[in-house]
View: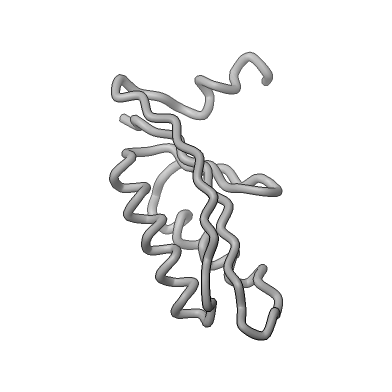
Length: 96
């Protein structure tokens, strides 16, 4: 059961100021390969799962950005933690 919703906007910085979209695509690939439920939005991606697992994935995403040539990364993260369980649908069902 998911106990957290976490949204992340990852902003890698390249030394030459190049296109960072391929790096963002790689970060989303890490999320997709995790098996967690997620939604990609224009400015952030929201994941649904266990908080500790998601936090480890965020660390993995940041390390991957460095491997791909980023000199620094800003990760803007929003967390909803509810030990009794939460889903993306729980927060958005009245709007659908």
